[in-house]
Length: 246
Ligand code: 6PG
Image (cartoon, rainbow, N blue to C red; front, top):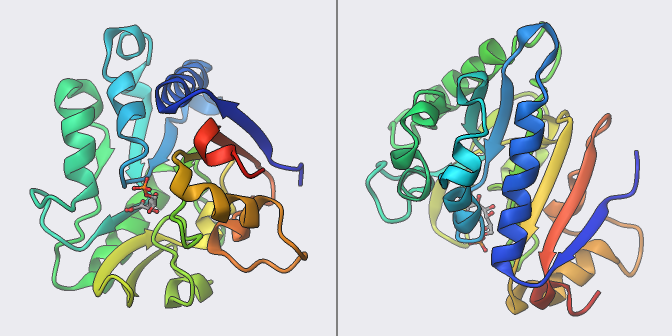
């Protein structure tokens, strides 16, 4: 497993533009056996600018959207119109401006009362779309992750049950510190990916980022450290503010 690549950009704008450039270039490469290019996208604040870039003509006109399938890394268990909904953020930043991409977006129906059923259905959709052979984990081509200042990534929060999940690809996770449910991809899926890119910006992430990337000892203390794809690569795209303690 190669060491993660660390790239530092001047600010969020530059970081987001580079993420859009990478997305566009990988999506345009073409996939073996006509498979779609399958990407999972995170929520939160940081990737919003990146999604806005994807919707600009500079990128939107180059990306072969009919060969791209978009999934969610995680979703808050709220209706899609709620201010906390990751889907809503993605729709406003990108999907509503890109009808062609919207058709290939797989929304986590996290507002369903039967969260186990919602998670199982999403996992089934992943497997079908990715043409995942039986007994293998769905292998996404690209996953964009974020990191919270407590070291969580996706909705894998420190001490939460989803961190231990090794059977299911999608898990309904109770997040005690937020008092809310979330649906999240699990570690086996993150670690089956071909490529993972973390997007982290802002001074408030600097200290935790230092702990995660340069741990005082080898023990993994934070969920973000557990993302180590077996046959894939990890890159960290940081702005200078987040990277200041590295
Ligand atoms: C979410 C996420 C989550 C996010 C981090 C960082 O739904 O919130 O997908 O893992 O990436 O919390 O969030 P910010 O970018 O808002 O700091």
